[in-house]
Amino acid sequence: MKKSLMIAVIIIAIVVVGGAAYLSTTTRQPVKISIATCSSAGAWYPIAGVWANYINQESGYITATVETSGCSSANAYTVNRKEVDVSFIMGNMIYYAWTGHEPFNQSMQNARGIAVIYPDVVQFVVLADTDIYTIPDLKGKIFAVGSPGSGNVMTTQEIFSVYNMTFDDIKPQYIAFTQMIEAMKNKQIDGCTYSAGIPTAGYTDLASVRAVRWLPIDPSLVTKKYSYYVPCVIPANTYPGQTTDVVTVGVTDLIVCNKDLPDDVVYTITKIFVQHLKDLQAAHPSMKQVSLDTLVKGMPIPWHPGAEKYYREIGLIK
Image 1 (tube, rainbow, N blue to C red):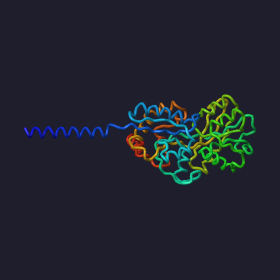
Image 2: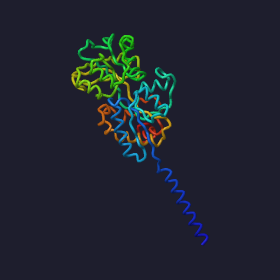
Image 3: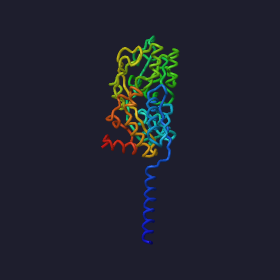
């Protein structure tokens, strides 16, 4: 009897301990994450929206929300400070943040990589009834360069520099992209610049109501000075009234997160991103440039362990 009782106690103990161990590995507390993008008129916002929807539907424990923001520069700060969990960001801006390069006054190294996506295409656009046909023609003109301290401002400064220009050569307007579009529609400025996946919704809207022209940028000049740019082309008919190809450059976009985001969360959202790549490509045409091969090429900062684990499982990282 005593022997039988002892065996029963042992069996119960095994079941309880085993059950507790099972629960500890399979039962997860709800987690909320925020995903920072840029303007709702850009490419990141709809892509993040589709991704968040699948995270919410399939993860079983993660609730993702998408936020607009001050774009790459702001995202570098907020993801570093854990004010947001995940950020879309231009590759040059995360590099600047990591190294403490201007516009950041200190090195910020709390971000980790999730994915490499597509090039943000640099798009200089002017009103068609101006005499502006090249970057140097912008001298003396009213030109919108982006929100103060934004990645867009930094990109514009770099493009100007290869043409031996500075903002002293123009009448710079420091406004956000949505404001640029309205100012262009109302002919309050001569031109503007914005870097995003193409087609960019705001530019499509602008070109549908106002005749505009895209300025070419010489990739050989830019890539010689700045290694993180790549040659790009805006194909003819990407936008209303744009009948010829436009040669320009782009900066590769990334998805990063704070280093303290739990490994299982990052593993899960990375897996969902990869498994729904075709759905994300349908969300915005720029995502059609993304493939399994490109997802892991060119990340300038360390990978988050959760993302790296998933990429190793599917053979993208050896």
